[in-house]
Amino acid sequence: MLKRQIHLFSVISMIGSLSCFSWLGSLKAIDGSPPSYTITSRDHRSWFAASINGSPTRYLNEVGELLRELPATCLPLFRSGDLLRCTQNHISCTCEVQRLDGQIRLSLGLKISLNHDPAAALEEIRGLGPRTAQAIVDGRPWLSLTSLTHLRGVGTKRLNRFGRFLSLNRPQQIWPIGEER
Image 1 (spheres, rainbow, N blue to C red):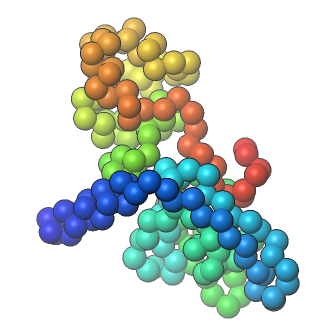
Image 2: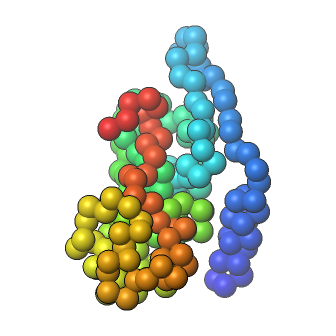
């Protein structure tokens, strides 16, 4: 088990060090009609995970790979850092969306949202304990990272240590493209 975790971490580290993940492609519909979707990965930090029909979870940063296996009409709204569990047969397709564990999101280089993620995800950040994580959740909405210094035990020095792992914004919407909700 430890060997697999180390291997996964090295693969993720290697992927995270690559400079560009932008991908642009056109897809054809299943019936062969002209392309109707242009998929562009706007940010190499837009990772999500997918498991189709109980297959092992794959970590992806482009929707095109997912659309090669599932019809676009099957995909629900999902954001960076989400896990899609999809089942498909010759009649129907359904997908369930969950948030990835905070530790996995941090390993992929994704930030934890101050205003949207639960305390358990905030606790995964080194230097943030359960008490501080709960205080962050209780103090929502946050308008700036520096306003966290008003919390007991959070000074500028401590904020500098864990602030790079935090974001004020909701995670980037990946699908449907161009229909931000």
